[in-house]
Image (cartoon, rainbow, N blue to C red; front, side):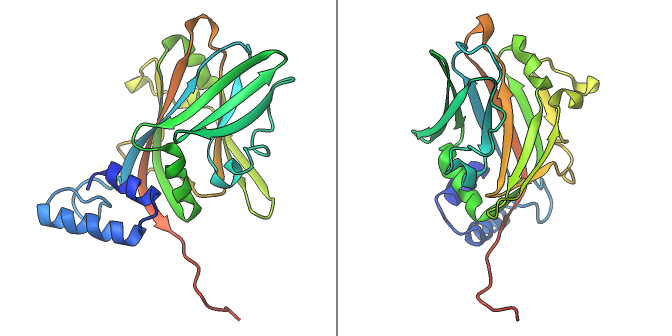
Length: 243
């Protein structure tokens, strides 16, 4: 079973434990790399790509969007996207498995579309209602090399608990550019080759917030997030009073 098959079945609601057992069983039968790294081979559970496309540039300002955060998605990310520029308003919709952010400023309208290469993005993030993903690294790459100024925008990690607590942390992707493997349209946050690397964990309360700059004369462009996952953890409450 490929990593893509695994994530698709997980997003469709199949048990994490049954999928892990199936993957390990098949790996054992073939004597090849094991999906969860419980033995020889890679410890990467999966890798998937999230594509974020700024479709237009009629609003000449950076526009923020959010990834993950399934609980906040249900509230159109209103509490997460609280840094909209000027008079810009934002609405959020779901279409064809994608999430679409629509921005309005006066008579101008722009959109940003979030999609997933492997399977419907909305199905995938629904899995985070019960599962936690430990992320080894994120590779950010941009389709238009004239738009690398986007890497100077802060990447903000937001945790909003169901009880209203709001915690935030941030980093600037351009500060992670490594001269040894520099490519002018790519930044690695974390080490994709290091199995002990741990950049962040994602669950139902965590959102990633980022902004895409104006398209200028270049037209629509796409920022790709290649996410390298070390493991999945399923959290189930025990039917027991602890008193």
